[in-house]
Image 1 (cartoon, rainbow, N blue to C red):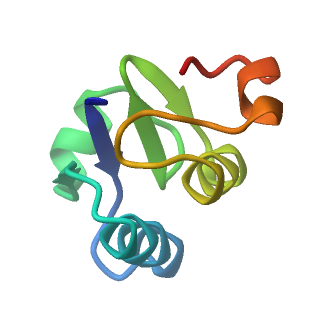
Image 2: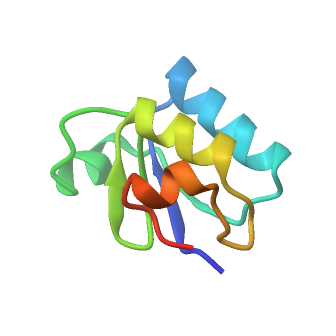
Image 3: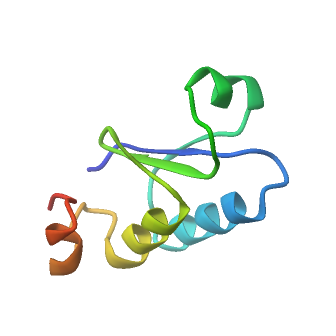
Length: 85
């Protein structure tokens, strides 16, 4: 199982959309949307998705979520893009 953390902020529509997509795919993830905690992580933009230690911006996160499943499997293009199966 993948370890997934979504870093975002309250009222962020893109953060909400990533959360919605992950819920639809039945992902188990941690959501951190406290501004102080997000700043403490050194993040300069949200949403940021972290999967098994790899951080992704919004565009890469969308691609990853659409292409993967909750068991960690991803399509061939995501594997060649650097994500593991």
